[in-house]
Structure formats: structure tokens, C-alpha cells
Image 1 (tube, one colour):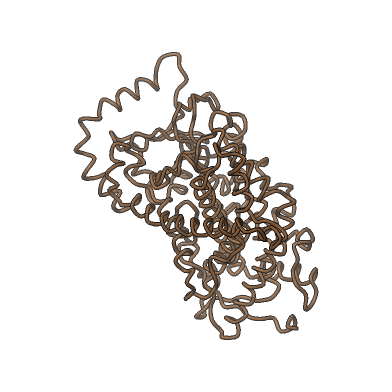
Image 2 (cartoon, helix red, strand yellow):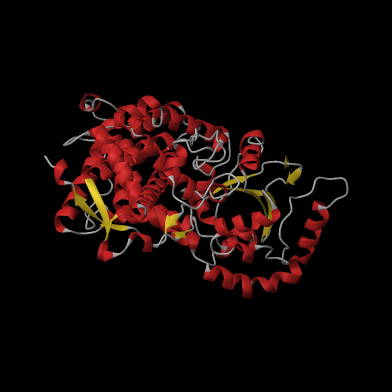
Length: 511
């Protein structure tokens, strides 16, 4: 961000005179007599607009600005008109009523690497290919039946996590919770797709490169840069974000290609179909390439798989880290959760996914975590044509940001909004399926995250297992009330200082 500000302060003024007429023209178009106007917003500087007011933490600055300018406001970020939605009512209008007009995505420049923005079902336009890929994912990977069939896989990966944490407990070592959760989420995805692990909890693993590359790609994709705000600067890649994204994508694509080549060679043998009892997702995709060559190729499969890895790993691990952080910071909540879990499971037992419906307080903890710390703090959309929300114009090609983080901390919606109180969801019927707009961490409408059912199953099982088997404390005698709970903005809203916690094995639960 410092580099971005340097560019804005010293490079862009050179273009000030050249582009001044654009600002004048935009103002005249938006204030035309008898036409709908843009929503209210803060005063805009020439050329740069409101970039400096948005700053390093847009989820926070946009929330503060919305208190002055209302639940729908307009900003100018360089040449990009941006509409910010900050209330459940406005979010419902944008993501439900106007969903058909606001169903495209806005994205940062690194997403353009290898034309990922064209082939991606996460970022791509709502085309026939996008609809086909989404249908493939929901039918063959994320359906209720398919998720049920992968229950043993999730259980196995959680057992591996518990084994690793138990070793840390025996040595009295703190666990890097973000990394432990990430490895677990990554291997659940990699086994569902390729029937193989792509990371292990040992930091010296040869798979460490893949693991780190996924994280690097998520980080660079979330970095704002001058090319996002001023397309005429995009080709210069002044901050090197596209170059870094290219390196990361090449590494991932090389791994994917090797796995695809090995599978195709194996599929060519006569005994292959007798060797496995059920195909994984890669087999399904390779079969579909024969039937739908226009919509699915080997190249598209690599882009498709990249989306599944990036969307299904960092978001899950981040939410679980925030949940454990809040529980350690609020020990009375942790004790309450552990009491519920241990009462349901009993001594010397193992948490099963079938136990989750019997754990309402655990479910409330996950909802409360998603309210306070949504993995995607700003839901990005783009207007494919002019739309109107509450009588205000959302012009074609405008970026639309739904501030989920701000809505989760709105005192007009939530009592004591900054406090971690899972109990609120024991008294309030509300879910995260995209219909209750007070709580939409996975979005809503046609661009809602299709992987939310898998994410929730994983989070419930992991958290329940860790709380059942271990007590937790901070390392080096740090008091819970002194925990650093600051966040770092990106594609996902990470904990700025990773949680390191010491597990304490419960002796009454030992076999």
C-alpha cells in the first residue's frame, strides 16, 4: 500500500491536467436534469477521487463513511465509480432484487494472469461457461450426497490434525493455529479433487512450496494497486503484483498439470476402473471434457481447480483461527462450549459430524465468528447495466461493494455489536444461507459461495474436535484480555498477528 500511495502522490499528478476533463464530464453526466443521481458520498479530489479516504483498511473506513453518507453511497476510486452498500435492506435490494443486473464481479489486476478472469467461475462473467462450471461444482463436488460421501475423508484429516496437536501438547509447544487449520482445509480439498495430500503438518514437507504458493497468491490477489484504479497504468505493473501472481500461478498450474497427466496415463490402462471404488472430482472433470469440449478443456480445468483451492482453504482456516482466538479471549465461552461438546460425546469418544446438530452453542459460536470476522469483508459485484437502488443510480460498469463487515457491527441491527456473544444466536432464528441479510458471510444470490455447506461441515467438525480433546492457553504467559485482535485486509480478513496457542490434553479423555 505504501508503494501505491507513492505512485498516487508523485506519478499521477503528472496526468492531472490531461485527465481533468474526465472528472468534469463525469460530474455533468451524473447530475443531469431529470435523471437519477448517484448516491451521496464524500467530496472527491481530482483524478484520485476518494482513494486516500479509503486507506489501508477499506472495511473500516467505508463503515465509518457510511455513518455520514448512509447505507448506499458513492465513491470515486481513481477512474472507478464505486457504490458501497452498508445495510441489510440495501444489501437485499442489491443481491436479490437487482441480482440479475449486478451479477458480474469486480477484481484486482492479478486475477487477469493467464486470463483467469475469463475462465474462472469465481471471478468470471455470468456466461454460459460460468453457469456450466457452477453446475458441475454444485452437482459433482458440493451436493449433499457428495458431501455425505466425503465424511470419512474429513474425519481422517481431522484425526491427522489431532495427532499433530497431541504431539505439540506432549512437547509443551504452541501451535500455529492458522497454519494447522490451513493444512487441514487444503488436504480435504486436495483429496476431494485429486485423492492426494498436497501438504502435511511437518513444516519440512516437500509440499511446503505448494502450501506457501496458495497463500502468496491469496495475498497478492487482495492487494490494491494503481492498475485497478487507473487502467491506463495497468500494463506497467508498477507494484509487481501481476508478476508475483504469474509466478504463483505457474507453480500451481505445473502441479495441476502433473496430476492431470498422471491421471490420464493411469486412466488409459485397462485395469484403472477396477482399481478404485469411486472416482474423485478430477475423474469427473476428465469425463466431462469428452462430453463438453466447448465448455471444458484441460486449461479450464486448471483454472477451475485453482478457484476451488483458493476459495476453499484460506477462508476456512481464517474463520477457524478467529473462532479459536475469540474463545481463548473469552474463556467462559470456551468452557461453555467444551461442556456442551463433552456432555454430548462422553468420555473417550470421537466427535462425529452426526453430533453437530446436537451442539447448538457450537453452531452459535461459528455464526458469531462469521458476524464479527467475515472471511470476505467486502462482497464485490459489478453492474452489467444501469440499476437503481433506493432511487439512486448504479451506473453500468460501476463497482458495487457490499460491506458485510460493517453490517455485522451495526448497532441498529445488533445489540452490543463489538462483543463476542454467541448466545445471541440461541435466541434469534437466523442462518448464513443468504436469505437473512443481516448475516451474509457467504454472500447471496446467484454469486453466493457454493462451497458454504462444505466449509461449515469442516469448521464444525474441526472446532468441536479441538475443544473436546484439549484445553488451550496462550504461550509465554500472555493474558487472554491482552490478545492482539487486529486484522489485516485482503481477499480474506486475516488475523494480523497469527494465533499461537498451547494445547493441554484432557487426561479424562485419554484412552
